Image 1 (tube, rainbow, N blue to C red):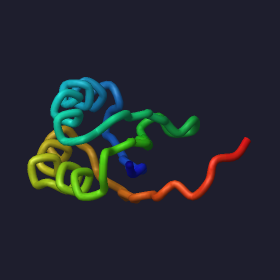
Image 2: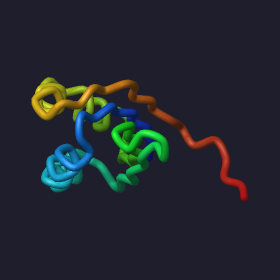
Image 3: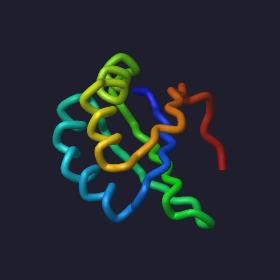
Image 4: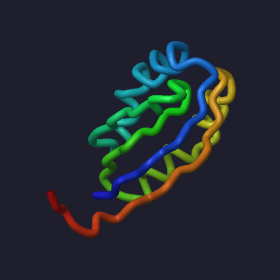
Length: 92
């Protein structure tokens, strides 16, 4: 299992969110286990997504694919950064 943190700058959250939701089945088939969305409280079009993915290779294949990049560009989304994270510890 790998965690992936994606940071996006969206033109419009309301335009992007339905497109994100429509791809949930495709993400699941590609190995995604969960996605938690966050919005910057000072800029609601600054979005972060914390994914849990079955493995890094499947996450990279999906998230870095040309089809995803093209889709995001067409709906006014810039990928700021994608970070692949290995869990180091859990604490309270």
